[in-house]
Amino acid sequence: MKTLKLLSTLCFALIMLSTGEVNAQKFAGLDKSPMDMASFPSKGDKVVKIYYSRPQLKGRSLSELTPNGKVWRTGANEATEITFYKDVNFGGKSIKSGTYVLATIPGEKEWTIILNSTLDSWGSYSYDESKDVARVTAPVTTDNESLEAFSIAFNDEGTMFLGWGTLRVAVPIK
Image (cartoon, rainbow, N blue to C red; front, top):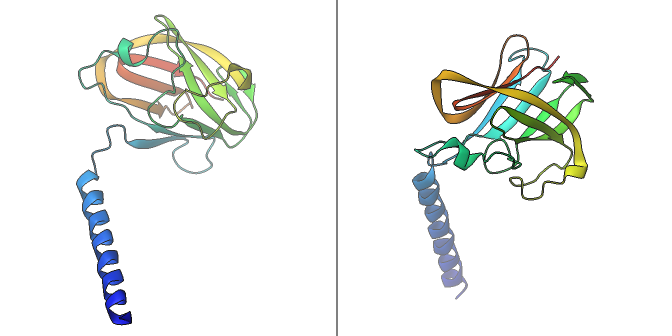
């Protein structure tokens, strides 16, 4: 009786493990908004690092995905988090070292870039304006190259660029 019980438990465990592997393999690489990381500088002593998910346009309009005047999580899935490893000047505002949520309010001619203290949040559903640490505005520019995936990058001077479609927004970090 004990042997039969042990065998059935082992069989069940093996079935569960193989089912998990099949599901993991089946869905591997199908993340519609894969995670990414951007940092400055890219080597050596980090000043800033951002973790975010990269939604894709997939034939949709940017205005549909980032409506003007509404708080956006600046990516997909979990709220984008930005870590400053030292005190910085972020778009003209003094910011203490630490980790913040990076949210944005898109606009036709400029975007409002928000650093908020509410961490570990999903999207912008729990956004609380009273937890804002800083808000800066940055002009919207366009580029000839269209980006299918939302992207965040830094240039050699530390300026953070947000780009999607042909839209570009730049925030200097010093």
